[in-house]
Amino acid sequence: MTEREFERTVLETLRLFGWRFTHFRAARTSKGWRTPLSGDPGFPDIVAVRGKRILYIELKAERGRLSDDQGRWLAALGLAGADVHCWRPSDWPVIEETLRAGAEHFDPRARTRGNRPTPLSKPFASTLDAAVHAGSAAPIEPSVLRAGGY
Image (cartoon, rainbow, N blue to C red; front, side, top):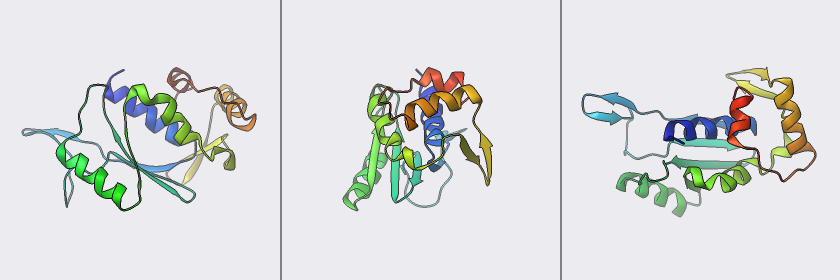
């Protein structure tokens, strides 16, 4: 799985389980990959909020390495009490468990894009109903997310 595919799967899973999030995308410039920002470089890729919980997430390919700046941000946020993560594709069971926690408190048949709700497809909503509302501990495979158009 490429880092881009992994990123898309994590973002889809965040939406699936009702997280509100933002993702900072790098752009290729003449000087390499850059993420426009003001302040210190290395801020985590994703900030996600649901209920009283906030996550700071850095995504890496299986062999990707944190930059020193990324490590400093994660350390600083962690010392401040934040819930910080550096996830790789091999972490999928932990990722799903983390993002699923508390999902029973929202309606999985609706998700939001911007400010308007967008319904899930019927087959996918059924899969999610089985997993979340029936209390199934069975993991949802990333391929199921992609097959559902997410």
